[in-house]
Image 1 (cartoon, rainbow, N blue to C red):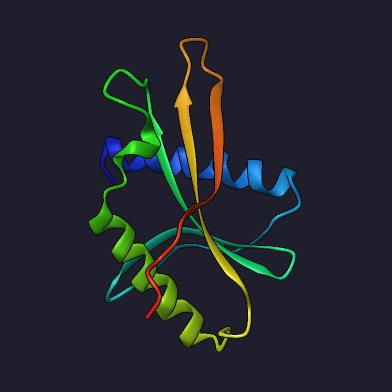
Image 2: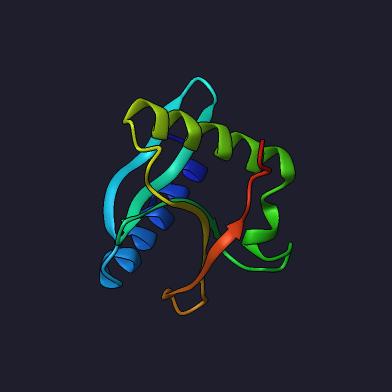
Amino acid sequence: MNLRGLFGSRGERVAMRYLRSRKYRILTKNYRCPTGEVDIICSDGECLVFVEVKTRTSAVAGEPEEAINPAKWRRIERTARHYVTRYSLEHRPARFDVISVVWSEKGAPIIEHFEDAFHPPRG
């Protein structure tokens, strides 16, 4: 794995710790299928939560969550649909969250959680 991949994995581990501390139950990480990947899939009570994690060393080039463009959201939504269908979870409510992890100069990560950050089009 390259340095960027290791850094992203580190951010995902921090995000999972954060989610667990808030009583989310991690179902899987790095779920891959032909349509794409979702960083973390977890549950918040009965709600399925598909989480995109963005990790940066600073916000100089913009906030991490701003790096998710419409094409990326479409891939996440298609991958979430694949997961829901594969595991017959169509009856469960679902939402899409973003967790931004920025490593401060002091080494402690700054975490922001954007719940319900995206609504896929109906249809």
